[in-house]
Amino acid sequence: MHPIAPLVLSLAIILIVAKLAGHVAVRFGQPSVLGELLAGVIIGNLTLVGFTGLEHLRSDEGIELLAELGVILLLFQVGVESTVGQMLKVGLSSFLVGTLGVAGPFVLGWGVGAWLLPGESVYAHIFLGATLTATSVGITARVLKDLGQSHSGEAHVILGAAVIDDVLGLLILAVVTGVIAAADQGAALSFAAIGGVVLKASLFLVGSLVLGVYLSPRLFSLASRLRAGGVLLALGLALCFTMAWASDAVGLAPIVGAFAAGLVLEDLHYRDFVGRGEHTLDHLMEPIVSFLAPVFFVLMGIRTDLRVFAEPGVLGLAAALTLAAIAGKQLCSLGVVGGGFDRLSVGIGMIPRGEVGLIFANIGLTLVVAGERVVSQSVFSAIVVMVIVTTVITPPALKWSFARFSNDYHGAVR
Image (cartoon, rainbow, N blue to C red; front, side, top):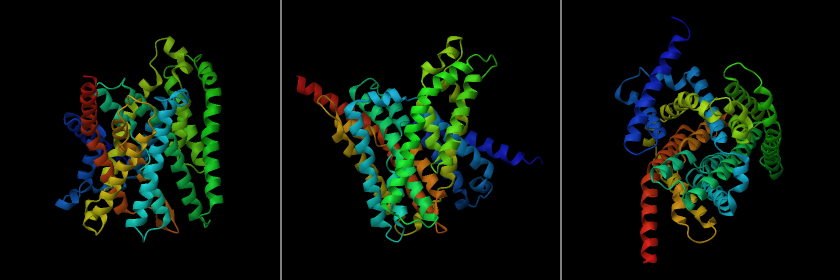
């Protein structure tokens, strides 16, 4: 048998299951990522009914590599769909909502960890807080579109805040992983060490954005002279992978660099390609991300061991994390400035963690301090439950909130 044969068969199984499960989820009004995650949970726990034929997927190194690549490209695509200009124009409300939407969940997540996991290290508590910070803007954007609210004031605040949310969430992730990596090498947890990591992460993000905004248009303009096919996509991917490598080289997560690479790119930079009839970069990225990102979500589901919920306290931890995740994002509604906005809808729109929470949790599984994993299997499974619940409740809750606000508003007008 050819060495690659087992990998391609595993990949075929994952892709078929992911797309079928995604279809079912969409039919029930849920985002496809939820179906992919739940399909993985089912596959990963077939051993409970005596079937072990797919157990190898849990530790397949080829699948792991494709999943990691899928995450890098997903964050690059998220960055491409936003711009530095948008960050500067989101307004005071979006900035305050994004900032509070990171600070609140971080403090609550840290508190839940310290309360329910007193035997775990402070690094585990901090990482739990970091896991609750980011919002899955893709899920909320899809729901707003389905509800016909994409152009509402609330939608503008939510989507603008999500850009700030992503940047701050990745910054926190970079700081936390940097501190944990330093601790694993024997460095003590000190304000100086934390400040050093914050400075390094900030310099990388700001420096890469400033340099990228300056160099990107010139680089793409030069590349547009090449007449070979696929130059735009190849150059975009090369920039993504280079920035991901650079991010890892300075001790940050590769996804930080991938997101920054996407953030500096604007349609204007590659207008020469589009002008001669080629598709935009985000359009070219879509089939690649649609191919690789589901591999990551299914794998995260596979790694969720349902047997850990029989352990004392795991269900309680999952419930507490979910409540902290929901309550923390409601605090951000306090950042909405001015009248005429439905603050409750803004808070609800920031709830879903989706793929971002899973990315954070997966990074946690790779972090160790003194030979001990920072995020245990039981904690990881509790995080997955939190992601599922926050993803499921957002669409109906947002629909109810907008309907309530509309009725109250029209009633007040009458």
